[in-house]
Image 1 (spheres, rainbow, N blue to C red):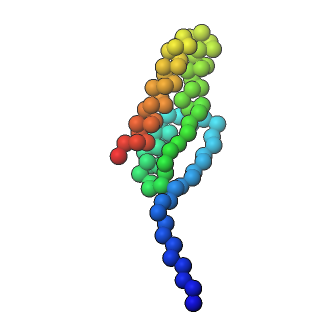
Image 2 (image 1 turned 60 degrees about the vertical axis):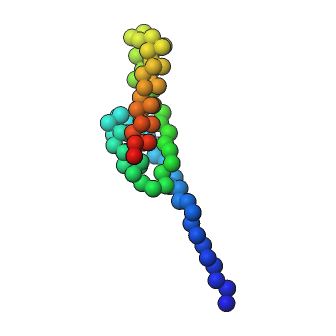
Image 3 (image 1 turned 135 degrees about the vertical axis):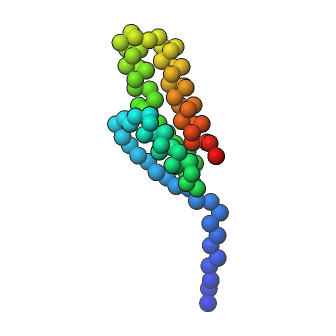
Length: 85
């Protein structure tokens, strides 16, 4: 009789949610939830962090440097939320 000994050393959850755009408040809550789930190892964001700054830049309401700075700050904020223990 054959037996199998399977040991799971690491479990990684892959969850891909595609939305047109969500507000930053909702994204913060989702990241807080995902951060507490064993196996979630990261995230990716897009329009949520760059849409508004680019729209303001295109309308000449802000500089490219200010838009880039805001995009970077938003992304760093989400990284900090996700990595918070």
